[in-house]
Length: 148
Image 1 (spheres, one colour):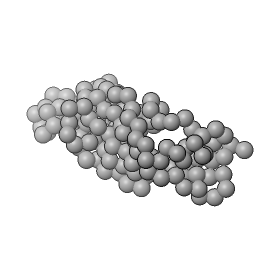
Image 2 (cartoon, rainbow, N blue to C red; image 1 turned 135 degrees about the horizontal axis):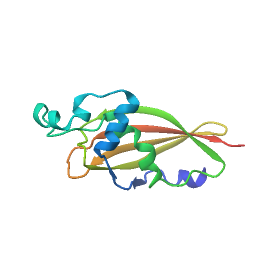
Image 3 (cartoon, rainbow, N blue to C red; image 1 turned 45 degrees about the vertical axis):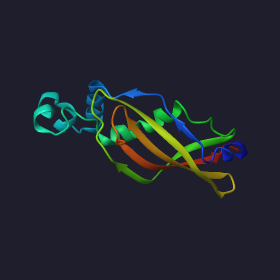
């Protein structure tokens, strides 16, 4: 864990990821959330202020694992990472379908909870390409467990 502790204060930026209509439709099917603002392109153009469909907030949030894999430091040797949840999540702006997103992860703290367990705190923002306001602001927790 010592090497990981030296990374506190560092910020990592993910690769870009396109929020395509096909992916949004697949997420709608998986979650049985077919609200027209996500899946009906024509209706969303005329009946919403968004000018088209937007990704589900939870879809954008669920992409943090993938986005993190593209940029976060390797896990400490001998440790197993577990998603521990969020202290705070804010969906601050919609993610228009067809736009690209990327996440910025700042490691704000790592604390030992008990022998063999470390909790990492990440301040995360999800940027939408060409949009001033981020789609998400969150404080994400990862628990590292000793594999031995």
